[in-house]
Length: 355
Image (cartoon, rainbow, N blue to C red; front, side, top):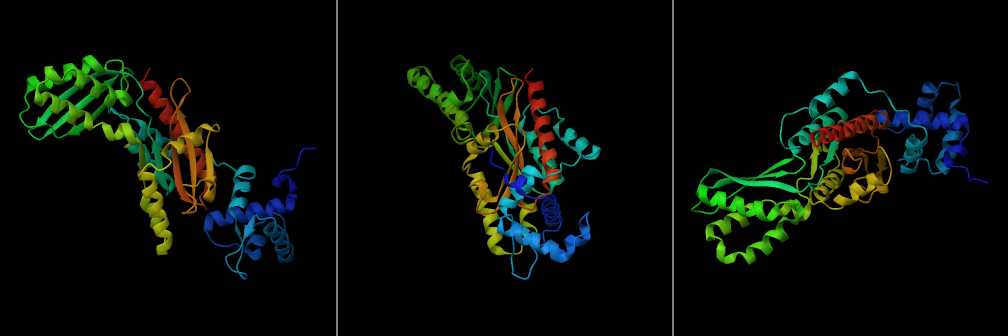
């Protein structure tokens, strides 16, 4: 026989009390007592009956308490049970949809500024910290060009075959002129056509060694300094992860130890610790995924929750992710559809740009 899940083992009365307690806790952030539940329950139950059921739920590992005399709060196990079996997803307001849709619209050639804007809007709407994992640029290179902006500032512009345009600023070598910039651009276009950005360093290193005697010294330096502007992105995925709204998680904290845990979390994220693991997590299942506290090692120290959804390209391939980080008492019913809708908008925007 099929083993009953934990949610199926609960009686209707236990489910109602458990649901009411969790929803109250998520709204207030405070332990919930039997008197509060008695006022909020649909069915009239005595405080003693409620206390007995709460005790059973605690013995099942679904509830816990901060102090013996205090009310009860859901454990991480309890929150997981609630999210998987009892969570009621709320409808998004027209205003929220309109704000998210507006953040996607933009005439920028680069996708990164748009994703940055989306992250800021998402953080504001959810009162959490937003996380946007931008797509890797895996398309073949179509064209590369150097543009002089001043004596000590230049721009390397890269266009891919799928129409994406990426710009990087860098400090050019002394003695630069338009002729040298053209020569460097022509050289790179001749050797990089058909290669992806992740292959840049290897291809250029090999070709420069072959053409040492044919390249002017300044041209050589220009190529190396221009390509160096891309190197960190190739190696560590720098700029792929956009985080906005850190202050939303720290603002309400008074405990210095808790603040330090949040700081460590963001430090780990910015160092790209387990960055690819985040994307792997989204590929393990369809749609929005919710990770509560210790379920994800990256968030276990801060005991935060992560609501994460992948977004795909026109070929339905997962190329990035968007999410919200917050305390475990997140308003999951409201945030899940917002994250889901944001992921759909990003995927649609990228697919249309690459059409």
